[in-house]
Image (cartoon, rainbow, N blue to C red; front, side, top):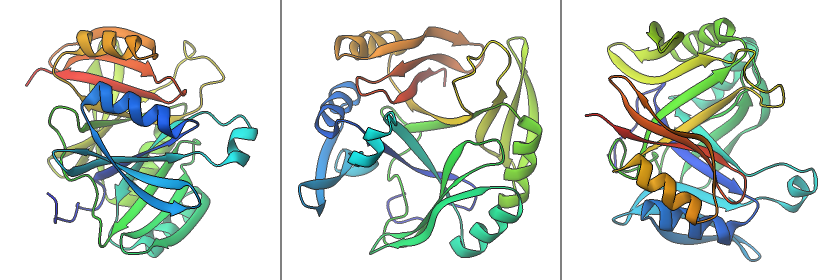
Length: 260
């Protein structure tokens, strides 16, 4: 995986923008047994590679002061691989996305664009060059699932399928309709509709799941490290046991112990 390109439409990277870079680095290192490699990007600023066995899993950086002044909470951002960033940016705009910034080049790594889909969920597109993305996935303490919670599932299904050439498959799950995004026979992510039970102040969003060895024990560890639990550990039939956690700096993510 370290030198391989991700196929277009597949999630390839996750990145944490934290209001407390040092605190966040300590939290995730303790929770997921990651090590950190700080790469200087400015005066006292770093882009930190979060690693497992010296291979890049994710990254994080300090939120700029102007965003903090606006009350922006810490957040995880997911990246989807594309083959032509400029063409995909133009197409995304035609399909109703809002371009937040980019596309622009990250020297030596690749090109990215940050956008909001038609329902407002933020996502990044990435054309990897020197850095393709996560070098380990779908194993303990690495990203294993990406899930869109949206108030307009029909529009989002059309958007991601038209943009990336994906297909959808509806999958009934625990009294709700769950949608899988697929690249041919390979499932790349999921989507659920936000109903009236979701608070109005929670926007549409992509959630990253990290695979863990024991959901309950890791949830307890997260709490001991200063996190809050949004959803207590719960079983999903035929899938696994997961929880939703807010880290001490305010970023929301999920952990899951998969059945297989």
